[in-house]
Amino acid sequence: MKETTKLILKTVAFSLTLPLLFAFVFPLIILFYLNFFTFEIYYLKYTGLAFIIIGIAIYVISCYYFIFYGKGTPSPLDSPEKLITEGIYKYTRNPMYLSGILMVLGEAIFFESFMILLYSFLLFLVYHFFIVFYEEPHLMKKYGQIYEEYMKRTPRWIRIRLKY
Image (cartoon, rainbow, N blue to C red; front, side, top):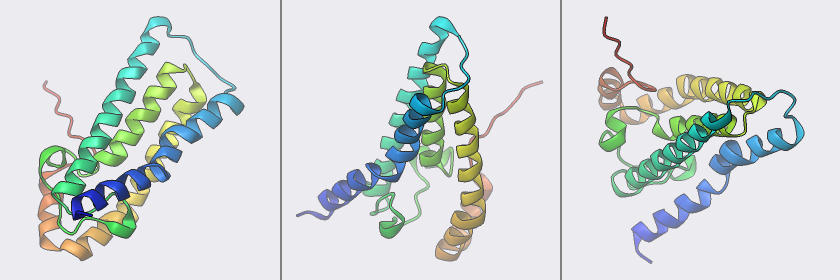
């Protein structure tokens, strides 16, 4: 079996575990068992579908770069050999985490669920602290100066420029 095919299969297998759990299973559990507070936004709720679709697209694009540029998978057990700074990784250092937040935020909007919205904020905090205290120090050790330069030119999440 070709190396690329193995990486694709490993990526699919990993994606059916933690990312699926955090982005879809937990929100569905909240929706069916903990959905105490809701809000009504009528037709605007369908914007949530756009967030979900954009989140899925960002995740798939991120996986593509992991496989074809980094020669690895999203799994920490089979991470990329090479630091990826191309494509979507030029705009954010963490597109996979960002995609998960967008998907969950989209679910909160679509299902008009305050509890899923709260979960999306908590998930963001968990991701943020994991990135700051584990992932970034790990990547600094692994890639050194190259990662430090990448951190300087690419935002952790997204860059928002406001014009006055």
